[in-house]
Image 1 (cartoon, rainbow, N blue to C red):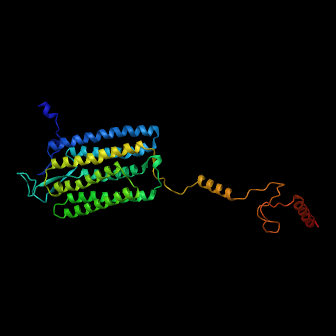
Image 2 (cartoon, rainbow, N blue to C red):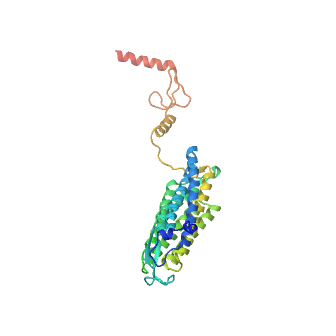
Image 3 (tube, rainbow, N blue to C red):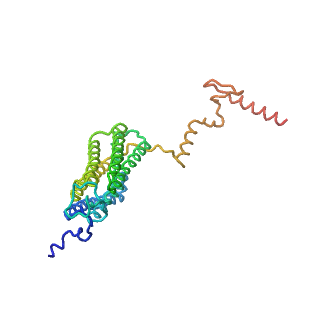
Length: 341
């Protein structure tokens, strides 16, 4: 009896008053995924604090994003494993049903907590991709536009936020109109994929394992839509199978991929672009003064007889021609006498 009470009681403590809901088996899987993300969070926190202490600038940039992704996913999976962060929506189809259903089709448990986590994590993951593709060996550095990279990153972030919100809104709708939101979300995901691959392959000319990781991530993105169609959309699979499907995708996209990207960036030594921003303050004035000094004629010292460009009467003097000192002195004395008279 004591052994039974020590088990997972999340479903019993926080019951879901729905017809089609998660069982203890699904909660056990969510607790396992929670432990994985919690472990990643602890490791990244240690690495981040170590990088802060050593002032390892590039390592801090590489680890900060995976650290926050792991923390957000830990928070979300703790919520879902506790059988919280959900709402009940009547399903459109009666594929997955129970015998004592209160309605036909039955009320299905929809976890909205995962959509909040995706909304926060996807921009951080895209930032990690951009940082990894902008990081090169010193011998491979090339000039890249900072503002072009920023533009592409903002377009990608807007697209992924759009498809996450589209899937969330569609999941909360009972009627067949939910598939309109799914279609718009899928269109946004395809648009983001085109922009991302064009930026990586054409603009940055990324090759090698980076393309493999990018292609794997995009494959997982499309599998998210498949899982949504089988669960919240089509009500084909039970919520236990749904959380397993989503959990595997989240582990691949938000645990493995950020780990590879952060390890790659930390192992490299420089960024492939340097923002060409206008300089302000002392450095700018100093550079201008140096330019002026390089173009300004040198000051002639007393007794120097060579005139580089201008003659006595405004004409030009041939290079190398000198004016005798006595002539210059006599002219100065004559002018002084005339002024005195």
